[in-house]
Amino acid sequence: MITTRVLVVDDDDRFRWRLGQFLETVPHIRVVGEAATAQEALLSAKELKPDLILMDVRLPGMSGVSATRHLCEALPQARVIVLSVYDLQEYRDAALASGASAYLIKKSMIAELIPTIQRVL
Image (tube, rainbow, N blue to C red; front, side, top):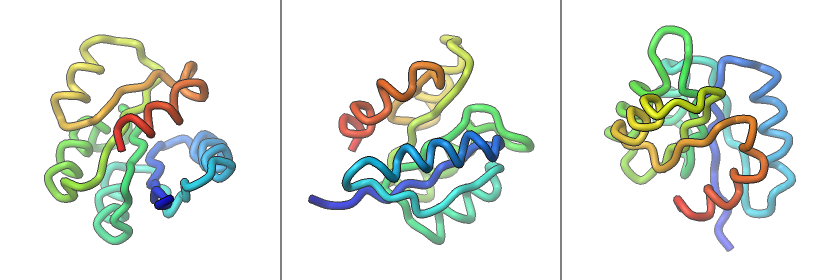
């Protein structure tokens, strides 16, 4: 089975670390990088060429939605799952319109993340 290369993008250091620790327990998934801002995500994604980007919807500077649009244009083979604490239809619609493959609420993410990853890849 092929290993999925993941870039985790979130401005919360602890969240990135916890998510990375969780993903490292999942067979065939490897976290290849982390970013705290959209700008870092754009640079890291171009360098690392991940298969999947887990993108926080709200980031300092450029939003996760705008970053998703840029990443989908620059790396059309990569899939983006937008993560948010906000269960708002307007955020979900904006994320999907920007090219995201899925939108997950962080509080229910652990139960839904792996099945969503499998679905979008």
